[in-house]
Image (cartoon, rainbow, N blue to C red; front, side, top):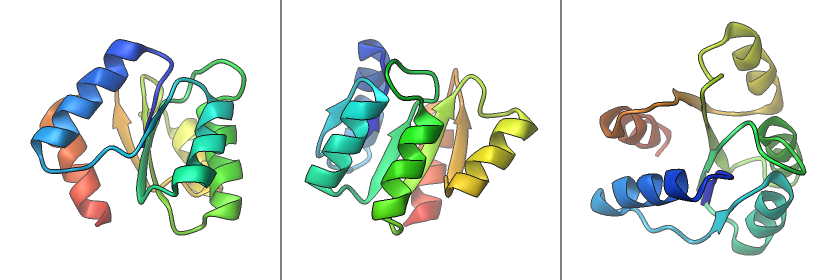
Length: 115
């Protein structure tokens, strides 16, 4: 599942993942939609933006992980490299981090690491 408020980022991630054999079960454009769709579609892996409308990526991840502790979440954000963000994200249960702008090889490596 791909979660980002920017359509072009979702499209870019979709293209990278599909080229590498991953199936995208759904997408979401904000944190609330991410929570609802995660519970409905039960994805194995979620790429999660941090700064989104309604509910941010950290809070959405917290709610998803509480109900789905085995789902793997990769925080994809311009802030993913900050140590304080990483600390909070780890406490929530986020599994990996990819900084924007990202390169496709780094994203795929992080996903493979989670499988």
